[in-house]
Length: 182
Image (cartoon, rainbow, N blue to C red; front, side, top):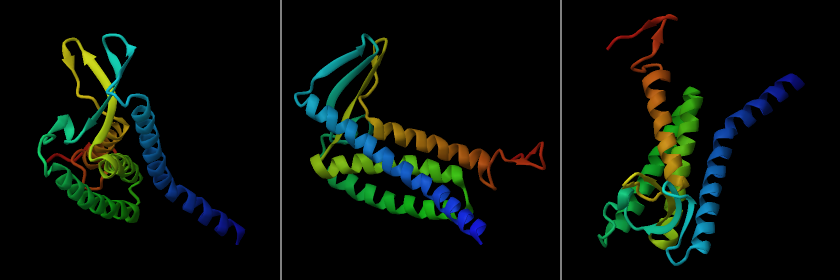
């Protein structure tokens, strides 16, 4: 009887780890943004590695690479799009939970964590706080934040899931060594 209870508690703990990860990612994102928001209110910049890595405070009112940043209706559009996306991600998470796709659950925790992190910024300040800036020779990569990083990691993990881990994956191994060729 106690073995069954212990197994049940172990399963509950294991099943809540992606949710805990999601919360930790949101907190990390918001703490980092609030830190840089307070430190660099006047669009300040700090050199971390000269010629390569800088901390640069900016507020992006658009999407990736400041897409639609100068359009008045963009913030409303992004808020609606994010809300719809979060509902779809929640449905995907419940699907992954039901199918016991742990990798997909973790990848969705990253995607949703990044999405919520940027969504909070849009609700608070009608823009997303960005502060990580990299320079590669003459190319200045667009300034971004931890939430953007979480989104990229989550999407890469989702791609890996659908290419290799899903039961209908494009490159799923069959019978040990054979690959399905499509």
